[in-house]
Image (tube, rainbow, N blue to C red):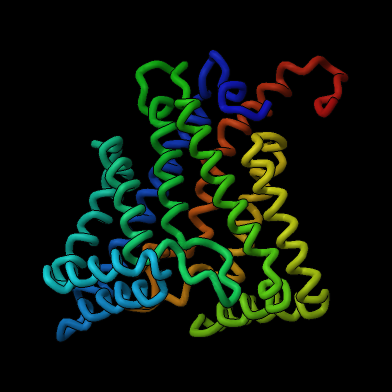
Length: 331
């Protein structure tokens, strides 16, 4: 049983599953609140308008990285930011992040907040990240904003189950499937970039920068991982990474073997977050959170996997309870 309809069934989600989903929505909201704090520190509390200049630099950098067909749009956006004033744009972005976080934590006006979050993240993906360009030098993902969009879709899908008056209320299967398919496409994109020769032959280049500027214990941890990778062989490890991501993408896209791929994807995301992303750090006044990736990019992937895991875990537990004594669950 791998689809949401099969997982929840007519009985709906149980109390433990509903509580777990509420906690996940709260967690996603806390991430937005933390992000707002880092953005305010980087843009609003810097002296002599340094924060506004830092934000404007991000728009300018995105424009330079954009392909030719996208650059005119980003030039227009950058001119608009200059005209309005980077400080006011920064204030608006911090306010939006605060509103999204508060709505998710309190679950007040959460549907409107999720819709706003989806639109806002898509705009930021274009304006701040130039759709993830340039895809060179070993870059293996399109940026954090697509993951944020998918997380908002997942929140919308589970709202009936966590806020509905009936205990038999179930998540919206159609939206959950849309979120799953988008997540599968994101993993397929990431996996395809892992098979690029540059990534396979420069795997250590993804790990070494993660230790720079980190606390001693994180730098030592990443250094230990680098030693292990060198002992095993960087190319071999890179191939294994590409195979794992390809397998996860196929499973999430097809909806098959999810009880294997979803826990694997969650653990794999945490492994990447603690190694290549260095726990999302280094954390400083303007060192993170600026482009929406506070706490790291892949941590949002882990949150999405948890949204998928809750109904799947209930389905597995229900199957065990209904299984005849002596039967083979894997048969």
